[in-house]
Picture 1 (cartoon, rainbow, N blue to C red):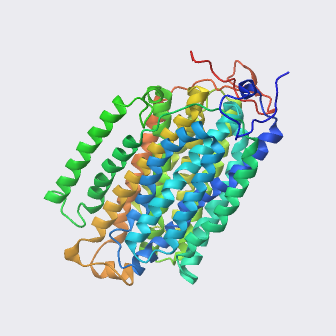
Picture 2: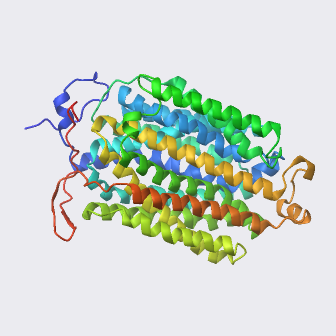
Picture 3: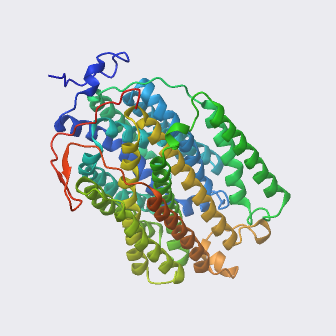
Length: 524
């Protein structure tokens, strides 16, 4: 009988390799999963708790032009961190990297809370991203280590609890802290949560089996990616706002970005173990699955950032009320995710779920774009549909990618997925920010916007609602690309302890103890 004893995370790599094939009982899997939940909550709530505070932060620092960089700086550093942490977790263990990620994120939160100006806040958010960008890919790699692909749908309920809690609490707490206390509390709030999450990870992840594999870190590749992304996003942010689109400054930024992206591509193609895993990305399921989840995640984050501003300047809601109105788009991702995950457990054809739901989401976004002044309840209802559509993409895309690669490549694949999701989100945030800033006339010759933001814009003769119509159109286009990605992605049978497929396409699943698929041989 195989040894089912979990491997000590501090045991040297390669020790007791036979035990790596031993499945963990469901009770052990559940304990490990619960050890991850607060860390995932910490990363999830950070995506929503900041959103409702952005207009107030802009007013306090008298700087709306650089407001998108509070989000973009976080996304850039998290983009670079995700693939590196995926490899580091293979080298040093998931537990150590999870603790490191939570620690850096907590230090970044303290730096943000103490920030005296916009630049300091942006740098603090960059430090946050260097830690926060690792929490989800490491957590996803842990789940892939201990749960077979077909059985991961059963854990969508637990993940759903995390997202519902973060989705409900984030916007409300962010609005309340900002309106009745001070926006810095949204960052101080992360500190006790980070300490508790670190303790839980330290205790519960001791049970985690080790799947060590040595890697070389491509730090130069990560640096080139950051260097290429910054001028590109600066050009998108400043174009039409600080400088005309055809100005020398914007042209120089785009030229510099192109040169640096070419250098990045050269580095990826020539490095012994590149920042982006070329063999993994050569898998078509991985490529299309990553693109589908990138469209979903990017749309979700970008809307989360700009919908509160839309509520405040178009519908004149307060910070706390805009937080309440934002809840639906975040919370409703959970039922969409759970439904798609359950379909994956029992059906061989599963990608029709996100394709159908994304079609409804596109229709909802175009409806808001057509009539952005519709009653708030109408907007909330339509954004709930968008939330369900976005949520349905996550389990299908993520599990499909994990199922398409060998066991030792899961950490790398999850790092690559989070790289593109963060980069896609940064790009969408920059595009929507460029639309908003250009539409609001934030150019220096128009004067800076301060005080009563909406009233100032109205005096300038700006049609606030039409500006946001284009934001919703961009979001709809992103979801349309997500549908195309799922159309192109192959539906591979999911590994798992299930009985054969019936003639109707249904799968008789026996959700017993979660059993990972055996580790592949080198030939695989």
